[in-house]
Length: 239
Image (cartoon, rainbow, N blue to C red):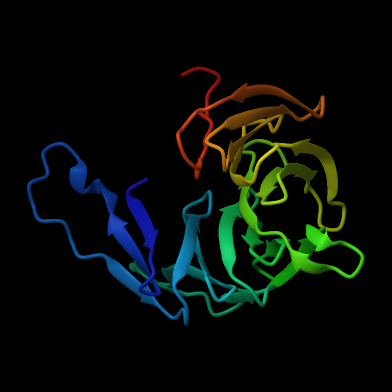
């Protein structure tokens, strides 16, 4: 793409012209468009797969949606219908767009929310609690990721687990696999068809899980000397 989004502690989203690095361009890069409205610092941002919507997440637990202004594709504004989404009283930690336009968000309040942005409605998947009976003292949910060609999401938690869900139809979501990483999980990724999940850990290791087999198949330890904050799969079946 030719547009880049960044989100910062200054409570803004900034949209940049990523085409400035094209061969032969010598002009000064244009100033970014600055999107304001969040009351808290931002922790995450993502583009929809069609590039027409941006979602930003804040430490105050609020999601906001942004889109190109009608009749002026150079200007982005907050969506008027369903532009603000809130399912948490605590901080967001990650957001992800599905190919079908649904949004998944994670929070330090122990829950994963699935959003239909056109209706501003959400469905909370089962949380992770130190006291599961009274649902007290939630574990932090650190990351969430969609598969590119399957209706699956994966998410990781400080309770040392990685879980994978089928989320094809609203109301039919179900957990299909769970893995014990043996350490706090900071980052997750699914391969294209959702058959394998990767998790980055607090101990510097990376684990791979076989989703259909519901088992860990590989541990790269130590992959890094410290926390693994991000993992990603190549979109192709080769390097």
